[in-house]
Image (cartoon, rainbow, N blue to C red; front, side):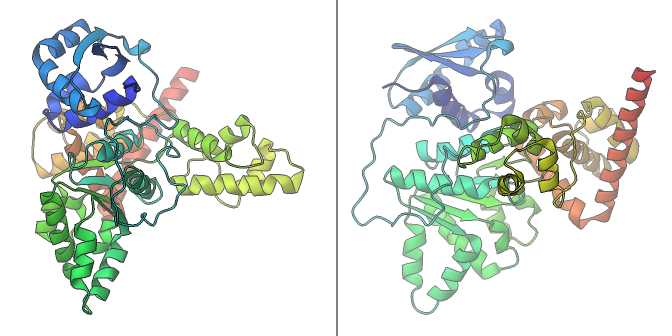
Length: 459
């Protein structure tokens, strides 16, 4: 069997992350790469001699076993040193799917094709640092259903959660599995209609599929009957080893309207966040979308559009569509002036400044909250220190664009703890005035510091 080494290793890492401790994963596995799939061995690259020695002596049996599950057959694994500048660059175009060694055949009488947008496929999903974990985890639900159960896709509206759910549903059906994609509201409406005498039919439909994909789970907040029905649906599917994928705008711990039993179930699996796209990802998205149109825009025009700091992929597509519609009306040339005319009614242009330094973020947060940097980096559970730590995590992710894994290493916390802190501040900045005021003050301090540094350099 031939396969792509990078994709195979990405799928293997997804499974290893569920098996080893967060500390072991971040220290020894996170920066490894799949180099080659040779006839007798699979070659993995690590960044130091010490790392290759550790992986060989301490983790090789587990890695070989996990790799065999992904490939479908036993294989030896070896490790080589590959320096960071030799590793393949991060992909900002659709990644190659991991191959499966199992041929699926559609079962007679299986669930009809899921009702989704056929354009929302894995191949059409543009991968960047902001959504890479969510993308890989979504692909892994097809390779190894039930391994990450449930999978939670977390992020604000318009960043690609529904796209990934639709892609999973379509890929599952193509692989011969039954899948249902349903927004939480549709699940609730179907349940209400079923109370008229078709409850067993409703339960049979939702509880016997291979994959159940629920969008906008926050709709369940405050609706106890819907939550109870979904709780039992989840239990039946989970007990049968079937895959459940859920999308929401917040972590379950931040959804105050959920019953404790359902919140507990949702926290069993992997939470993968999707963040606002940075410039490089926005440009890659625009290139992918623009290629689908008959009227082609030059790359300089796409860069000009990408410079606008729109918060969602949906808005970015709207910018592109407006420019594509406007350009033919003014002579057909997408100059900088034409693009500004087309987009000026939407938002003013915002060029991104250099992201703040991590130490500057910590300093600004600690000054605002009157706490010590050492306490914020340490294990203190004092309420003010914990709040300051969450503020720092949020600003480091949103303003400094630091990866979640790097933030976790900075505070000696695992991936899920960092996500929970970021999600808390994301929610509180719209519901708690004090949090919004603290963020404004911290960002003003960082901006003032940047101006001061620039002035001193100019002088």
